[in-house]
Image (cartoon, rainbow over all chains, first blue to last red; front, side, top):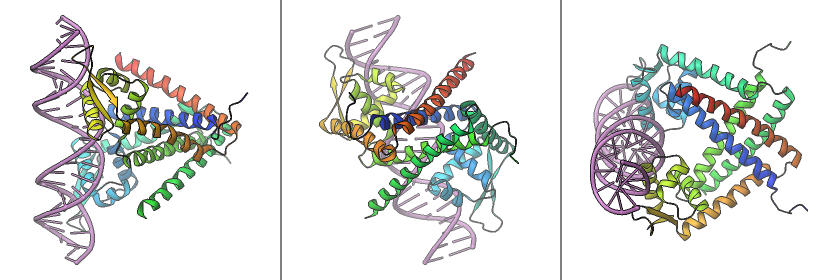
Length: 158
Length: 158
DNA sequence: TATTGTTATACTCTATAACTATA
DNA sequence: TATAGTTATAGAGTATAACAATA
């Protein structure tokens, strides 16, 4: 005798599984980063710098989604721990260009390889069919959530 | 001509999809909670209090995984915003029992219903077969990650 | 006038260490 | 002696507002 419920328990169970994995991934990343003297926020910035070298702080702040003031603090932290340096922008004396040190570049490279090796550890033995199904299912969920959040944004404005 | 790579790109793509969804879920939760005067950390505590009423701060700190000092601050926040109250423990005059206010109980109930309605919004129309496959795939990944983290812990000790 | 980055201030989460009251 | 919770202190992330230097 199956219990009749409007929202299938299977959907809640699947969401819980997603949330559990999300929390665990977060903890794992934070631990790995801490072992190398990084935090999540600083890593986000370092990654952005790797993508667009010689950015100024303003553009980094916009890209990462924080205020310029917060970016000042993040760059302070990355600079004092040796990952980046500030250099004057020759074309605008107000601005600071943020550049990676060799240590910063090594770390950015490590970020890339560790992402691949994590994928291998967690998913390496799955068939391409399985991987495709997993990815597609998650992509649908992601798209729906993004749309729901955008609509909630609009309502916030009204 | 398929590119031969040791780690299939499909695995990396699937991991990226998991990470993207995790980030989005995190943002969504934080936004919803903020609209009700809560933070993630305080919500975690409120949830724990709902599960084990009349806990003292020490047991909550252990359950949530923070130091007793941090729990003091979290309870301070929850108390000043009206979600919980401290009450003396009749059996131990050192301890404080943390109890939910009506507002706290309402919020705890809302946490439950919002989880179900999110599952419905995101996954409600999937077949039980699809949901099962998604959940099982994620469960495998979760179990592997948990095992990897535990092993990393052991190595840290040695 | 507008923009870049900073100082000033404030709130949250986190931790360790020292201390009080109680067990 | 051990435990529960606090004060004291510190670091990290986040924000707004005011301000300096420059565009």
